[in-house]
Every structure is written in structure tokens, then in C-alpha cells.
Image (cartoon, rainbow, N blue to C red):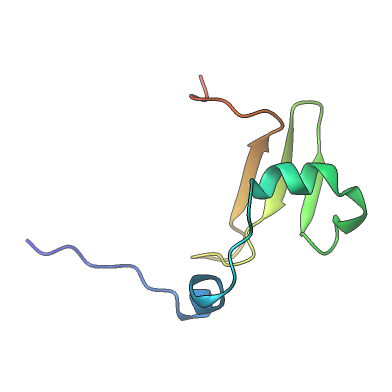
Amino acid sequence: MKEKILWAPWRIGYIAGKKEKGCLFCRVKREKKKDKEDYLLFRGKYCLVILNTFPYNNGHLMIAPYRHIKEPS
């Protein structure tokens, strides 16, 4: 059986665009003055909540810890 590929045409800006060096979430954590521009919704004690700029569906949220971890458990 052939797999169907999910395609979201509005993501072409991300696919074809310039890639940021380093960790996106570390940059967002550091640059607090860009919260609105980065679509940052919440800064907690251990993590942040941010909207995906190029989502596959509406309201796609990402929750990212402040430190790099191997497994979420």
C-alpha cells in the first residue's frame, strides 16, 4: 500500500526559505523582546508554548522545554 503524503502548500516559505542556525527554541528563550513576533504564547518555569509559524493545521502549538533533553519522560 502506498502512503499518502500530507502536503500543506503554505509551508513552501519554510521549505524554500533561509534556515536559522542553532536551536530555534533557545533563541526564542533568549530574545524576550520578540515574543509577539515569534508567536510566543506562554513562558513557564520549565518550558515555553509557541504557535507553529508554518503549521499543518490551525492552532498547532509547540511546547518546548528550556533545556535540551533526550526523552520527555
